Length: 145
Image (cartoon, rainbow, N blue to C red; front, side, top):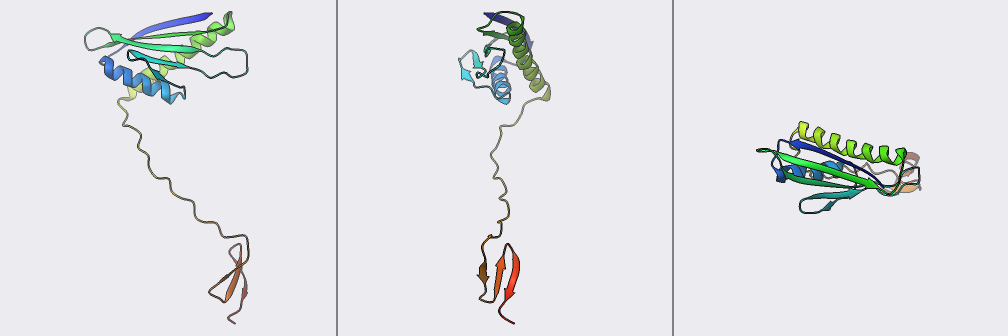
């Protein structure tokens, strides 16, 4: 089994660090499970050379006003390919957490209504005002003249 662990600190209280980590994991498109003291996530299986990586992010109190984050990751396989895959996923998550920390707090996403595309004219011939016949928005015949 390939394993990798990374520890680092953020200058945030643990509650805020936990929220930030959850947002970072979600932004990467990985499923997320709340463990109370941190998060658990894993890749979905994709046919290829590597096995999916399972990760846990544990948040503890660090130095004054800081949080200590520990990212633990593992997968089923052995060898350099599996090992570098696990390390790469840990590195990706850590970089995303640090990037989001540098950007500052993000407001929660609000669902805004999407603009509706303009209605397309019907492909069938239709009569309008009892005088004009249109097909695909083009006047075919004007019976008023």
